Image 1 (cartoon, rainbow, N blue to C red):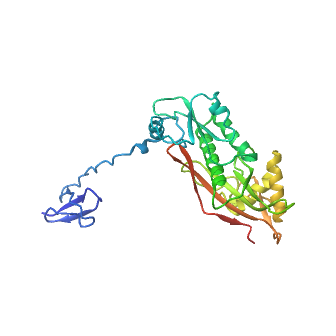
Image 2: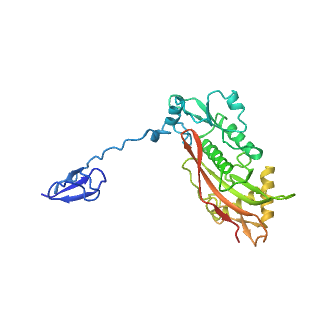
Length: 322
C-alpha cells in the first residue's frame, strides 16, 4: 500500500509504494513514514534544532535587547584575549568610568549571566572625540546611568553611540564633524546632523551635510505617525518637516544648524495641516539655490562583535537634487 513519507532533513513529503532509499529533493536518506491512507495524517515531530549559545543573548527578563550577548560577556571576562579597546566596569565612581569623557560608555542591567547588577562597558573608539561629538557621548553615558532608563531608551542610546562611531570611523564619509546629536534632539527629530567643512583659507560653512538616523540592534525605520504626509523616516519629506521643526527649537545649537541648512539650500518651507489629524507639518515649496551644499542621508544599525560595539551602515540617500 502506498504511504506518504517525510524527509527529516528538508521536510518534503512524497508518496511511495515502497520505503524510499533517499529523499528525491535533497538526497538525504532520513525518510520516515508520515501516514498511510485512509488513516488520519500523523504529525511527525521534527528534530529540534540545537540553539547556539549566542541565541540566548537577551532572554532574561528586564535585560535590554540592545545589550551585547550574555554568553559573550561571560566568555570574555575569563579570556586573556579580551579586546584591549573594551573595559568592563562595576564601579561607576571609579576612574575607568569617570575619566572616560573621550570614550564610549554604555551601561546595562543584567549584563552578565550570573548578575542582576548594572555593569558598564567603556569602549576606546580608536578615533578622536571632541566638540559636539564629545557632548553627544557624554549625554549617552549620563542617560544610561540614570537608574530609571527603560529598554527603549537603552536601545536608542546604543543606536546613537553606534551611529556616531560609524561616522567617526567611516572610510566612505571622511572629514565630517558632528553638528547635532543625542544631547540636543528629543522625540522624533533628526538623530544626528554632520557637516563637512569647506576647505580653503577663510572658508566657512559646509560643502556637504549628512542626516544620520541611529537604530538600535534589529531596529528599522518607521512611518511617521505625526502626519502621514511626512512619509517614512529619512525620506526627503520627513527631513524637510524636521528641519522646519528644528527652526523653532528651544535648543540654540539645533536651531542654529537648521537655519544654516535651510539658508544654504535656499529652502522655502511652508506649514500645512495634516488631512487626518489636527497637526501641522512642514513642506518644501519653490526651487533651490544653484550653488548649494549636497545633503545625504544614512542609517546606522547597532551591532555587537562580542563586547565590541560595531554598526551596519545603509546605502547613502541623496536629498535636494532638484
